[in-house]
Length: 492
Image (cartoon, rainbow, N blue to C red; front, side, top):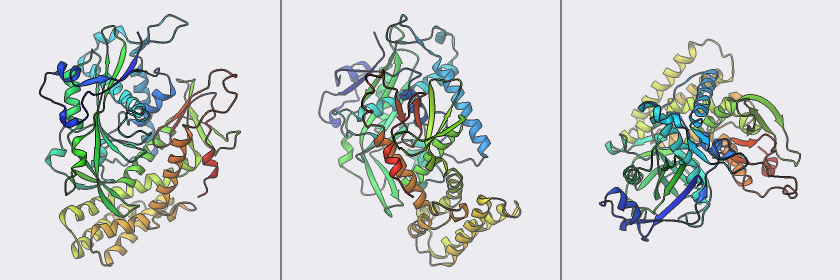
């Protein structure tokens, strides 16, 4: 026996033919069939496992923005990292020495009380959901094959720096899907993660698939393209992590196509999200994850790739965590930008949902500018770039309030291109320029992570491994120097 990731697909060709009326057991056995072969799950100390743990946003609340110091952010991520290590002690190697590892639930799990068991189930469910979703996209059976470009927790749609409002009562509550995932081909999926320390609960699997089917579309606004769009949810995914009768870890993945995707509503469905602003929030999250590890060295790969800042931890001596230096250098302006968006985006969202324009919008902008000026005045004279940026941002908002504010979309367009980051010196001056730099680095990293390894590595022994999250955090074995040649050709 081993730890398997099993992909199940419908026995029928259309999701509309799937019947939710049968009981849990026949719902799965009569309507779905497993694909052969199944895949082996990664080990708890593998780079794939740790990259997935960072990429799924484990332990972070995505529907709020709390302004805190860099020291507090580091403390949060170090706490989550230590908590994750504790969670993974639940998995023990049950194989004899010298044989392939087989991961089994620790015997003490049955002694844990309900709250602790729930926390463990949640953590394992989220991490292996990210692993299964990413692997499924690389298989030819997937509706839209490719690699994951975005993997958002659904609560990002309520983040004050990201949302343009909208939606209704149905958007609230606990029955929303956990994640929204976008493939490199552009297709979106709604993903629900289920985890348990027991055997597979087919009833939970059935309910999870129903949650993933809740919304047929995702409402987005592209600041780069200056336009809103209603994107279809092309597939509804449920991933169940559980332990079989022998206490061995197993994962089951369901991904039938969404029959509602072809019939888009005439108007938007749910809250509208500014895609690029959601990206910026996730880029900052990845930077905080990277900085939470102990400082290491700045290295340049001997094959000519761009510089990578590496960090490590004595708790995981076999792994190290890297990030392109170009991305690390943007941290101060990125953190400030998200805080600034958290101040101005609620005004823009209210203008969109309540129909503010003209004098009403100008009045709201003046009030927000006064609030920012009051907050910055308490700090005295500017002492760093962030203080200067706040004062200049308040002046920019006041200037916008003097203009002809016809609607929220024009204000958002000007915000996207405005040089509000000039106080931080050389480099990206606007949100648009900063996002372009980060997105280019991300695309380069995602593509290069899939390049073949250098010739000759087979004769030198096992090839060390690496993985890159969707927002640029590199997880690699300690003896591996990532081959990222595209980064060396970037000039900003």
